[in-house]
Image 1 (tube, rainbow, N blue to C red):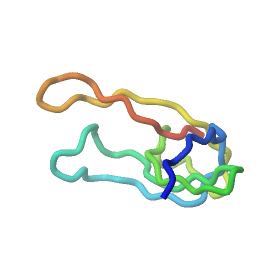
Image 2 (tube, rainbow, N blue to C red):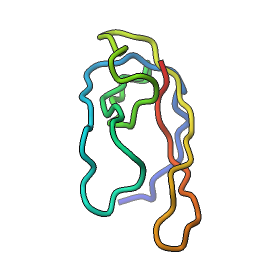
Image 3 (tube, helix red, strand yellow):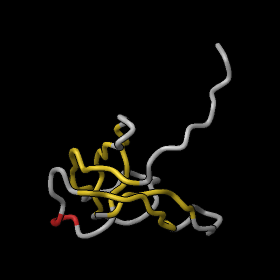
Length: 87
C-alpha cells in the first residue's frame, strides 16, 4: 500500500447531525455540556467533531466553519489544542 498523501480540505461545511454531551467520560478533557456532531464538507467527507457555540442553537443544514479550541491539559497542566466547528 502506498504512503498516504496530504489533502487540503475545505474549512467550511454543513451540520448533518449532532447531540449534546452532558457528562464527560473519565479522563476526557474539557467540561460539559458541549456539542458533538457530524459536519459534511463540500469535498464529500463527513467529519465527526466537537461543536462550538450554544448547544441549543444547532439546526440541520446549518453552515459551519472550522475553528480551534484550547482545552485544559492533563496532569502536566499544558493545554491541548483541538479543532471544532462553529456555526
